[in-house]
Image (cartoon, rainbow, N blue to C red; front, side):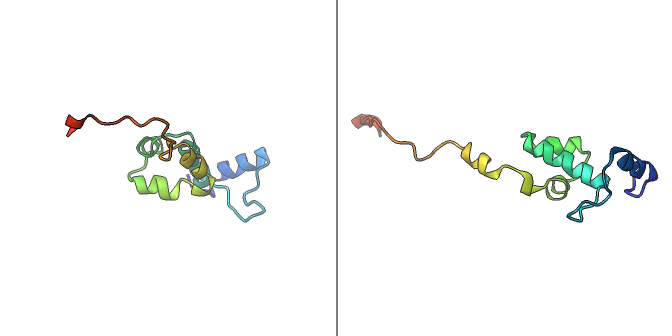
Length: 99
């Protein structure tokens, strides 16, 4: 489907969605696909599974073109990592024959 497809343009008009928004972004089928790819990433779907769902031939296409990194929660992902700076409260001595 081309973005100039009259049926798609009619659907946008019927839904009250402008073809171009106030920031100059164009609503076309690729914008819908990018939204889909970004929602898959935000939902925690693995990149390989997202690639299959989007019927892409390469992971690069899925992750570089159809996923908007500006909309991903990178800080939340980092915060979800386990802490490597956990406070040690008890030290257990190793037996002498441990080596």
